[in-house]
Length: 59
Length: 498
Image (cartoon, rainbow over all chains, first blue to last red; front, side):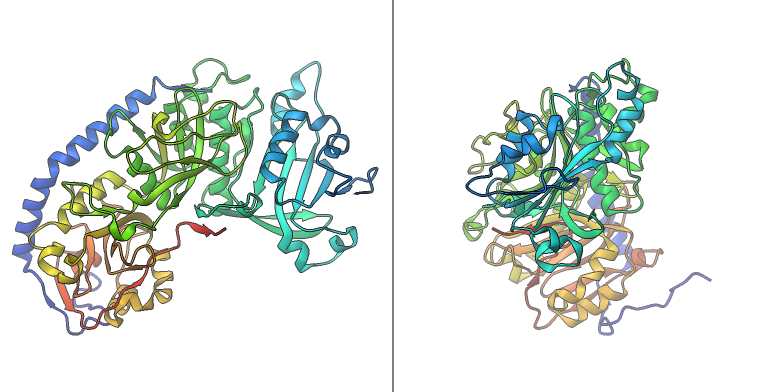
């Protein structure tokens, strides 16, 4: 049995559902679609940074 | 006055008749004029007494001596001299038992090596040794023993290059590695001469004497000792370069900053919050970032003295120069920096910033939709990395995180080893209080779904219980009535006040 299927947090006895699982899946899909181009650019910039570092001698 | 000039441990008390020049005699050939000038320029305003510990065996120099100097026909002394600095007058008798005044006035030490052109070896000074400034710094602590008396000193390690086994690349790597090994047992203590060996498998040219290192070799050396470094190139991150550098330092991660031919260690910053209330966001972002208040980076240049400054006059205006070294540099001259991240931090700063920025302006989770109190003024965001353990450890010091429900939930909430935190404040509250935060799993990659753990606004706390419990997302909310601002998180850096 997995741990914690019915666990709750102290202080959150009055908590209620903010989003259903289906709504949250839809949100995260849209969210990642929107942010992905920026993340892709950053990944490219990091690779370019590593390449540039190969030509940069310090002494 | 000099007490015991012929003893193993002479004590130099600086007064009208006895100045720093007397060190040249007491330290013999280990100290040259250049080294004296550097020490004096760093310490002359605070030091009253100098203990000269002769025949000191320095672990860092001894390894270099064994691997390099001992193989020469003409060999330097295998032993060093260690200088101990005090801000008060110290009598010899005070060293023979625990003495609060001695402990309080101890400013740190500097090892003198018999090397040229730089004789200043391993050095650890309290930031207070250099007066007249305030800032936030990464610091580590060491125990120091003088004739059996244990003293503690907290600072950032410094060493100058010896020109043989080490040039600026190795010296700067040493400072970084010694900081981490002093502070965290997971990192090994590495000696200067060993740093060259860390690049043995991908060396360019011979290891000794060294001709310098490429920036990528420095990153590889860090990988050999358990870091997962990221290299940032100004040309590849033209807009966010300085902000990202600041964000890593704010996370308590010192960075290696490489100019065209030189590299320095940056490990702190000075900010000016006097205009925080009137600082506006830089469009198109609706947010003010805490990096906008930064005026200086604090660092060590191995050619200079500890605790130097790369100053920034008002935003967008040229940075002032770092002084005290052979050459002068400005922040705009930094071409690369290396952030030595811990192995388990998979989410880099720039990705966290993009993700949290997008979340905070989203219709579903954004502050404009959910938090009228935050919407009332331009939000100030502070981004930093920390450990889940450190975050929880300081919950009790932070006024219940604004609401009893929040501190109770955070105490229970399972957290990863590393978390990214985005604190949300207002210019009228910053840098003392915040209104909320977003907590993000730093062990996720940026493309993974469901990586935020909590979104906390004054009006409500949203928690993804599913992510916290390692199962499918389950996003719940708790309404927070009567929430109040609470203190910012202050664990990553130590504040040094004037």
